Length: 206
Image (cartoon, rainbow, N blue to C red; front, top):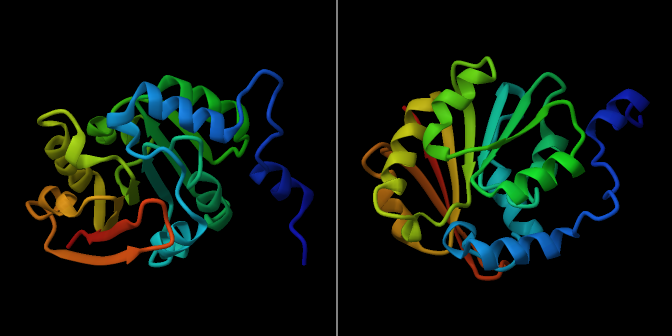
């Protein structure tokens, strides 16, 4: 049965307004301006997205948080899977990406925040939540400024509910060094059908 017009309208990404760049233009411009924070010159593949999100229990997900959403490559698939009463918060330090997401994603369950992932606890609280069920990150931990990666990892662990998970896709296995001080239950896989091939981690909070 097709979704109701109300549901379809809520979940629809709006047509790109005049003067707003295409996703590829935005992503490439973001990489050129902030290569240390973006980490890749092209968005993630559909295969990576499906594999990364496969372990998520959507029926138990009320708050999903994403770090570094870029042009919304993951945002739209997450919104398609989320329950009607769930929330997706996307956090990015790139104001251009945040403006783009606010223009192109009109789902009432979605909030784009200009800020740092290290402040995830406060951002979650500002949105009326105590903790997140899942947090996703494609931030390039190994190239972040000194101290930022460890701060994000610690804040993420604190912000997750028990049995929640930190989902991480990276192009370097060094990210595990940031996970091990906080998580002991870590699943790992690879997605070769991505440019470049990606390391996938699911860190479960005990």
